[in-house]
Image: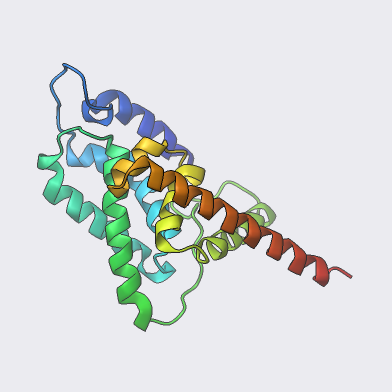
Length: 201
């Protein structure tokens, strides 16, 4: 992943008051659009990709997410974190793009690290690309509701309350979907390993 994104997010977390949970006496200060864009672009990009937006539509989906952010940023009240709020928007945008892209043909696979020039060797880049392709293939096997929960919990390390907030469901629903998603993902991994085992000489 791009190395600058984590540092940008850390800086933004200190500067953007509204990225802290609500329930404090400090007045909420809405972040500037430029701050949100710089700090969270990479997060939005990989989120829409992991939510199943076809490769050819990822850039358009990211643009649509930030169009919504630009339009609605003034209404952000800090009741959730910026990350949770953005993921909720990304889920809805990704769903729309998956529907619109059904008429399109296959596209060349994208690297999640393509936002910056790669620092790894060609062999390392190839290995990462293959691993990401396998990951996305397995994610594609999950129903949309389980996929969203799995991405947030396992890949973005978001808490169950944050996930419930983003999806507008209760925590018990999140736990149930996550359990089913993990079981289904583990089975997909086992099938993949068994298939690869048959290919060994």
